[in-house]
View (tube, rainbow, N blue to C red):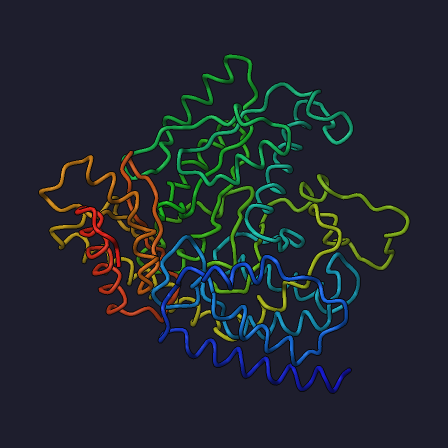
Length: 478
């Protein structure tokens, strides 16, 4: 079996290296042929085992030809990075070891504590011992953070929410903006807080939460007998890469004794760009901070991270150690499983360590700054184009714009831009996705790949023009 694995693994490495090398020369994405799709959907479970070499051949013929496209330098969709080669190697080795990283004295546990500290240092967030853990992504990190915020608020009201449940609490009110990621609402619903107790605070034209509007609403709600407890700020919104005034939000939270959670899932590492860095002032004052190494850093999915100021608050929210998991040698920090929901936890830290170690601080900073500069260049190109319109100023590495020739009416622009993202995708030369900003249909380009070039940006805009003009005239987008 070992010799079969060795041979197949060598074949797989060669196959994947060729795949990665060939990405820039292929189309970014194409719809799967019906027969290929049904071949995966309807594939029967083999009665007898399949040789490893045959599995590698099946991956080559049935899977690798149909990627999402996110490894390509002209993939600008959603927030999906190309995988870092070092991270791929780390994921491979971690799978070979296959431990549970819940706790114990083995390499993955100590490595996770180290890489969490590295991540905190990169974004400038204070890091007490035990003040963070890796998660499946920012959605899970948000659930964990909001649970800790809920438990602190309950304790201040004299309620042990772990024992008595949310029914023993008055309505706890959280404050978000219209640009806050949907995972916050999901977390509030899951934790029994109720989405109707998430108050949407007004924003300026670019989408920044208005601190004075927040302050006024918190005081109004408190006077009405409600229990404000949480504010969620954004360090890079998904729609347009907007960074809230985190210092001003932290001031309000300090005045009103509210938990400040900052969502930096996409944008946290924008703090490394010298031009964007000042926008992140105040991030270090948050109570909790979510970020995703599997986004801008290119760590292979899945890998999110939660950082907190008060490790004991987190541990007090989740720690439950039955006799069969007791570890008298665990030390003062205990197990990672005491700080979150997961008991069996995958070995995520090795691919983070490999990605960061291969690039170094200077390499990560260089690549982040490159992506931000490309975004600013794309924004300039859009502003200079008579048939395109920039929807918001470029703050990080997301550019939101629309196809908007001067002689087209708003109805036509709405219709065309609503279909533009998919039309560009289907042409195969670039990949961009759609959104709505200020009530207007638009497309957004997220730049996470430092290998993207200015020529790639020009291809993207040419594709938007070509597809937009065809849609405008009601022609097929070929």
